[in-house]
Structures are given as C-alpha cells and as structure tokens.
Image (cartoon, rainbow, N blue to C red; front, side, top):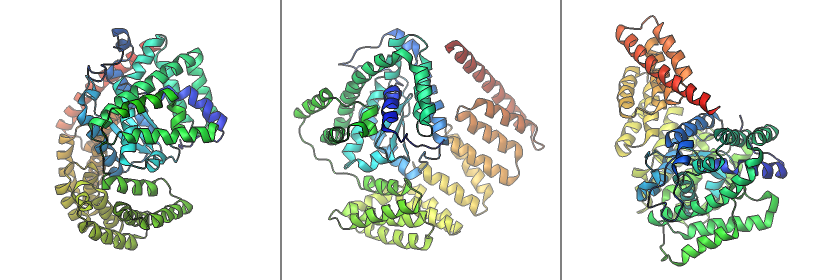
Length: 513
C-alpha cells in the first residue's frame, strides 16, 4: 500500500472530517498532575478501552505502518526523534500513565505537513512537517501536543461517550486513514461505513481534545526547557496558511482543527511565561538534512535536495552549513557515488571536529558513524566496517542502529559465529526487539541451523503480534532435521504459551463483535 494522499481537495477534506479523531491517541490514564484542570475519567470509560487494549490496538496498526514502503525505517532519524520525545517525557513521566508505556516516535515519507498519534503511545511525523519546522522548539511543540493526546486517553474517552460498537468506528477510521493514501474511494467507503451518525459527536469531542492536548503539550514543552513561543509560531503560520488556501489548508489543520479559541488560549499562556531562549541542537539540523534526502528517491528529488543544500551553504549559520555538507555526503551515498560520499563525509567530520559546539555531536549521535559504516559496507570494506561499528558502540552504547549495522558487518565479513554469539547476548538484553530476532534467524540460516532459525523467526513474529505466523514457524522448527531435545522443549513451551494467548485474543475479538 503506497502512502499517497487523495488528489481531490474535496475528497481530502471529507476524509479528514471522518478520520480526524483516529489520530487522537489514548493509551494511558492521566495522572493527577496532568489532569488537574481536566475532567476525571470514570470507570465506564476505562472499561471500554483499557490501557492494555489501547496498546494492543496501537501495535496492530503499527504492523501495517511498518510494512508500508513509505515508513522511514532509518535508525539515525528514529533515534533522534525518540531521544527528543523521551527527553520531553522525562520531565513529565506522569504522561506515560499507570501502564508506563514506552512511546515510539517515527517518521513517514510524505511531503504533506502532518503528524498523528495512534493508541498506545505511537507518534508519527510526516517528513513534510519535520522539514517545515523552523526550529527544534517548533518540532517539539508538535511532539508535546501529540503526547498530550496520548496522556489524556482521548480514544478511551471518545468510546466512553459512544457506548455502542466502540471499536468498530475506531478501526474503520484507522483503516480509512491508511487507505486514503492509496485509494480515496476505498477510504471513503471504510470511513462512512464505520462512522454513521456518530461523526458530529466525535468532531465536537475532537475540538475539546485539541484544547486538552494543547494544554498538556504546552506544559511539557515548557518543563523540557524549550522555547514555548515555538508552539505559537508554528500554529500561527498554519493559521495564516488556512486563511490563504482555504480548501488546500495543511493536512495538520484538517486533522487538528485550529480555532481562534485555541490560538487565544495558547497566546494567553505565553503571557505568563518568562522568555527563555533555546538553542537548537546540531542534531536537529542533521536530522532535517537526512530527511530531505530520505523523502525522495527520484532524480528530480535528489536535484531539489542538492539545490536546497547549495542555498544552505550560503547562510551565515554554522549549523546549517555543516548540515548541508553532511546532506551532500548522504545524498552521494544514496546515489551510489560512494567515493564522493566518503570524501565529503571525511571533510565534514574534520570541520565538525574543529567546531567547539558541533563536535559534541560526534559522540552523541549516530548520524556520522552510521553513514561511514554504510559507505564501508557498500564498498565491501567489511573488516573496516566491523571496527568502525565496534568503536561506535563504545561511544554510543544506546544506539540500536549501530548494533544492527555491526551484525550486518560481521555477516558480510563471514564472521557468522561471532554474529550469532553477539545476537544471543543482545536478545537477552532487549527481549522486545523483533529486528534482533530476525537478524538472528538469518545468521542461523547462513549456518545451516534450521531449527534455531525458525525458532528465532517465530520469536520475531510473536513480538510483532503475529501469533498465527509465529506458531507456523514453530511447527516448521519442530520438523527440522537438526532439532535437538532442548529445541523441542523450547518449541513446546512457546507453543503452549502462544496458543493460549491467541485463544484469548480470539475470544476478545468475538466479544467485541
């Protein structure tokens, strides 16, 4: 399913009306701090969609999102977004709620300006929004707003007001939002079928949800040390766009209605705030350069990116210049001009090393190391790639992307046993990471270890909430000629656990119908 929006403005507007509330996440019960000025959720609402059910619903949606070709599966970018989001959550841990969910922040390749939140703490950003944000505080203001939707459990509250077939309209809206990008007609049918006469009630609720998300987002933005004027400036520019373009207003405004009352409320909160200057991180500039290249794979798109970087080089801002040079290196890599990419990357790294403020990024972000390793792998310098990845893991022990690259480098260097040993340790440390299990399965395949290969793949499917596929992999593992007694015991235990879990899921599904 290709992520593309409908071409007709009327279809976009109509679809936006039907799908607006699907982007109002609700994974956690609000704490007393966040909810001090908000209505308290009653037990009825909490029964309609529990935090556990919200997370499960969000994970099911994310399965479709991650399979989409326009999902930006780019580790350095994901790490930046998640670092920024977790920094905001650290100042207000109560936003995670009683379930203490691990939020996931991600990006999708789409030039349309939009952001959204799914149940369970999954928050996505269109590449167009990341590039439109003129400061890190602006990007953080959108992030805070979406966290506010999650913290206030807006889907659970919406369901509490409906009481009837609660999950059906939500599923329809989510499917419509995804279908809209490939088939406007199909999206309309899904949305209309799921919504019916409840549309107006949901729209009315969505306006209140927006005000609540503004309130919580503003608090998080302030407490995290960002410039709260970022929220005002971002929404202000969107409001101007609404007046100028009417039916072709930015998608963010169509799914997040911006009323005069909301703007007035945000501005009123600004009056009581002492101005606090916030200096954008260098990583923000690097992330935007990376997004500018990642959002396209066409010759014209690459030419547009090069033109933009040329313009950036003429500015007086050091961050912009260095980010443009990094962008050129990354662009050369994507165009498979590896010699040029290496030359440009080496030059920009030397320049960053001599910059007092920017050189910190060499030890705090994987942007440079990841690109260097990618170039080494592309040019078959496998041993060098292994050494670079080992050094990067020492400097950036929390970078999952570097871990994946290290495994790729070991495999490329035919060090399969080293890769398997490393991955076995990693899956013990990070038990909820399906990508590690997938890599382990591939390494076992290269070693000819069929039973272990399919057990690892089963774990990966289970972590992605695809239990039928996981059980199928266990069945293949059981019949593998090299399955040992211990392997059979593991297979039996996991099969019992997953069959029981799948049975419970099917029962829940039947009860909802």
